[in-house]
Amino acid sequence: MGEQGGQGRRFATSTSNRGRYKPVGGPVSSQRVAATSPVTMLTLRHRPHVRNFIAEFIGTFVLVAYGTGSGAQYILSNGTSATALSSVCTWGIGVAMGIYVSGGVSGGQLNPAVSVAYGVVGRLPWRKVPVYVAGQYLGSFCACCLVYLVYFEAMENFDGGSRQVLGPNGTAAIWATYPQPFASVWTGLGDQVFSTGLLLLCMMAMSDPRNMMPNKGLYPIANGLLVIGLGLSFRLNCGNAMNPARDLAPRLFSAIAGWGLGPLSLRNYNWFWVNILGPHVGAVVGALAYQGCVGLHWPQGFDNDEKLVAGSSDPQPLSDFVKDDEAPVITDDGQWQHGSQPRI
Image 1: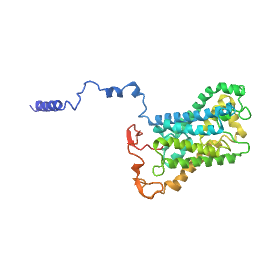
Image 2 (image 1 turned 180 degrees about the horizontal axis):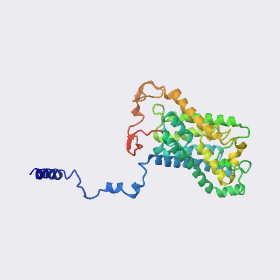
Image 3 (image 1 turned 60 degrees about the vertical axis):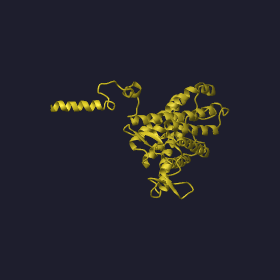
């Protein structure tokens, strides 16, 4: 009787809650079908490193496609279809579009110097830095391949098939940056350290929720304007690369695609490294400068729920500036987390 009574009670419980509990072995719900569909099985929501790699790859691809495409138009048309100004602006537009494409996943750093600097100041875990950097270099290289195919016939028309680095028919500057004859190695190195330092100083400020951080949708545009401003200010000496992925990967591509060792052997191999070392040093210096001058000195309470309005000494809740439900993000374990989108 006890066993039968227990079975009766269990049966009664299951029947009384029939509307609330689905019977085991019953019809499969549409949600369960969707969870095992081929499209869902191909998603990478539980593979954060792969997602970050692909995001940085495609974002840097967009950036370099815009920039090298504008350079090709300018050089191959002898300045009739584009100008130096339009080329500078296009690089800034490429930055903005690249961040729009990848920012929701990886933050849209698109620059190995930025990723390393963020690792130094703790904004990006070091285990992610190699993943970001690999995606950035590969995305840049692949963009050069496709831009080369798009402008192949124009290059053939321009130089008759004889690829030259510099000179009247030089086309290597489509891909990488080259110094003016008067610019020494030390001038180029200082140029890259200083300009990339300014880049990171401003990026750190724009991504600090305690400072004048722009709205999430305007953040890419702000970064694009930053790059345009630096290009208009510091382009003369050596092209103002500020990004090793934007310079080294295209330089290697041009060496493979017909320009020979010229892009690397310029000045007896004593130039190509400037646009690798300079941006990395400058980025770390700029990030540390922001932390030392601004980031570490906010009044008590700013880390939690307080922020000063520009031009006012009255604090306002940080939630007025960064909404809790601004954007859902996926954490490393693949779980959705609601909160303000991190600038990493």
